[in-house]
Length: 226
Image (cartoon, rainbow, N blue to C red; front, top):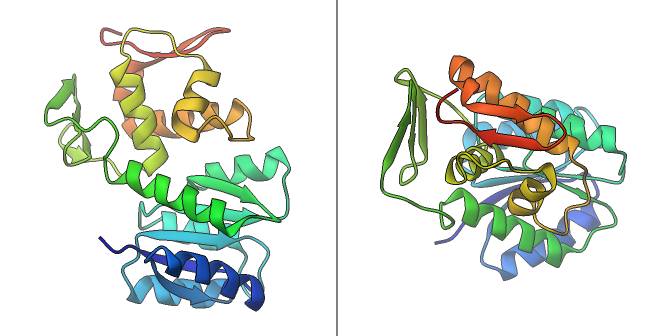
């Protein structure tokens, strides 16, 4: 299955370099040189993934990420030369799924994108059953999560985190274990990434966020009888 990507990067040479690598792996690439053009393309074109630079003219990547996430759960990978933890946390707060720092390897970027799409498409932990916990319903085959019958729009990382917690229901999971399982052992961020996503996940689940219990100084667990 051919996948499509929206690549948002103001450096023409870097954009061309990254595009070549994605096309070699049979991706369809839509290019944008600034945030305004990126949003125009996003409105008119169905894409499977957004790779987004932060420092751009006219509209920065943070604003683009916020606008896209406000209407879609499409996976987003942020690229930036800034490696500060606060920047990474802001990206995750806005709904980004991955965060890569420059200078970057296009080959690694393509690999991360492919892995993210495989997780999004449900190649990990697919299950035909619908699991119900109070007002929370999770269908792993269709990746549909509802609360009291209302659809909950989760980002790929939020969905993976929920499934991982449910899969290990009753077990206390450390932040480090969740980082390795969801973000990968080579992820350079810290445990606050997990806390940020748990906070957002609970907020989206509303009252049913009660199933995600905090275990002081240990981590989190999915408690089926809160």
